[in-house]
Length: 363
Length: 276
Ligand SMILES: Nc1ncnc2c1ncn2[C@@H]1O[C@H](COP(=O)(O)OP(=O)(O)O)[C@@H](O)[C@H]1O
Ligand SMILES: [Mg+2]
Image (tube, rainbow over all chains, first blue to last red; front, side, top):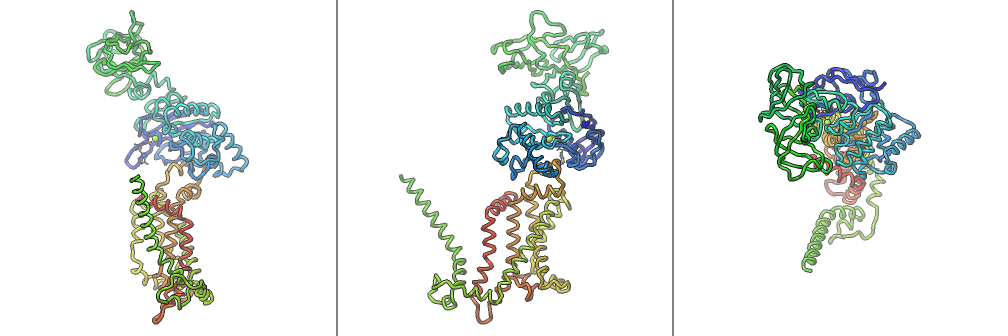
C-alpha cells in the first residue's frame, strides 16, 4: 500500500496563502494529475509532498505512514523536475546513479539498475556522455531514468514536458504512460496543460487559487464539471459560454438568449422550479452540429453567419456569433464549405451545461 | 584587392600594438630575472647589460646558504593554510547566507563592509592583543589574521556563485537521498568549482602580498618573503642581487598558480562579472 493521503494542508508564503486546505487521496498504483492555471499552487502542493516545502498545517501520509515531518530523503520518493535538474559535471551514467550512490548501493547493483533503466528508456548508447551533449528529449529521459532506478514508493513529476517541442511532448507523454503501466508505481504529475492531464490521468485534481476545485476521472470532469471554471479549463477548443436567461414554465425549461432566440431543454434536464434567472449556457464545440431536415431529440436549432472557417484536415472549426458572443463549432471536415455564409446549427441541449453566472456553480 | 591589403595592414598594426604592450609590461619582469643571474659588477655596469655575461646562481646560493629562503617557506605555509581555512569556512557561510537567508538581507552586506576597513586602522590594537595572547611571531597568528581578513571577501564572492546554482539541482539531490552536507559536497562544490578556484587564487595572493601585518606581527620566527626583502635594503647600500633573487623566488609560486588555474580564473571572474 503506497497511496497518498493529504488532509487539511495549508501553506503560506509570508502573507500569501498558497494552499488553502487541501484534502485528497490517491490510490496505490494510480496516476494522479494536478492541473490548473499557472500560479494556482500545483508546484507548491507537489513540493510539499516531496518535503521541499514546510507546510503550516495538515498531514501528508505516504503508504499509510505520516511523513509530514520527515526530510525529503526519508520519504522514499523520486521526483522529476521541469528543467531536468541534471548535474552538468556528471556523465549520464553518474547522473542516473546519483541517488543510488547517496544511498550507498553496492557498485554491481548500481551497474545493474542503471543498465536496466537505460534499457527501458532507450538511452544505453548515451551513458558516457555529459548532459550538455544531449538533446532536450534525451535529457528528459535521463531525468526520468534517475527517478526510476530508485524504485521509490511514489513518483512526482513537475511539468516535466513543458520545455519540449510539441512533437516530442506527445511522444514523451506516451512514454510516461507506458512507464506507469510497466512499473506500476503511484505517480503524481503536475501540469498546466489540460490535454496532458486528460490523456495521462486516472484521476485529475483540478486546482484553483490554492484549493481543489474538483476531482475525479478525466471524463467525469469533462462531462460533469461542477463549476464554469472547470468547464472552461478542460477541453480544446474551450467550451462556449453563451449568456441568457433560464426560463421555466409549468415544468418545461428553455434558455432564452440575450438576442432573443429560445432554446428548449430536454424534459429530463428540467427538474427546476418555475421562474426565471440569468444563466450561462455552456456548450462544447463538438455538440454544435449542422442541423439536418428534422432535429434529433434533445437538440435545438439556431441559425448564424459563419464568420470564420478553419479546416484542420480532420475537423473544421467554424466561428459564429450566437447570443452576442463568438461561438466555436467543431464540425466534420466535409460538413462545411469554405465559402458558406449562413449555417443552421443543432445544439445538443442534453449535453448543455448550465452555469449560474453569480456563483460560477453548475446547476 | 584593396580591402584585402587594408585588412592585412590592420592586422599588422594590431600585432604591433600587442607587442608594444607586452614589452612594456613584461620588461620589468625580464629585468628582474636577469638581475638575479648577474654578478654585482654586471648589475651596475653602464651602459646596462641586457643579458648577463654568464648565467650564475650566486645570488640564489647565498639565499639558501644563509637560510633566508625560509621566508618563502613561511609565506607558503601561512598563505596556503589561511586560504584553505578561509575558503572552507567562507564557502559554508556563503551557502548559509544564499540558501537559508541567515541573518536576513543585511548580514551579507555587513560582512563585506568589514573588508572595507583599512588595515592600518586596526593593526596596532591588534598587535597589543596579539602580544597579550602570545600570538606575535607565530604561524598561527598570521594564519588567523589572514583568514579573518579574507573571510568577508570569500563569503561575498561565494555567495554570488552559489546563488547562481539552479535550486532544482540541490532539491533533486535532497529528494535523491542526500543530506545537506552531501548536497554541499556533491552538488554545490562541483557546481561552484570555477568560482572557488578564482576566489582561492585571490585569497592566496592577498596573503602572499601582505606586508603590513607581517611586518608588525613578526620578529624572527615567521618572517615572510615581503618582509625579508626589506632586510636587503640597507641605509648605505642595497643588495640588488639578493633582492632580485628573492623576488624571483617569491613570484614563482604565484605565477605557477595563476598559470595552472588560468582556465578556472577566466571563467570564475567572468561569472562574477555578469553577476555584478
Ligand atoms: N517561495 C515562494 N515565495 C513566495 N511566494 C511563492 C513562492 N513559491 C510560490 N509562491 C507563490 O505561490 C503561488 C503558487 O505557486 P506555484 O505552486 O509555483 O504555482 P503553479 O501552480 O504555477 O505551480 C504563486 O502565486 C506563487 O507566486
Ligand atoms: Mg509550477
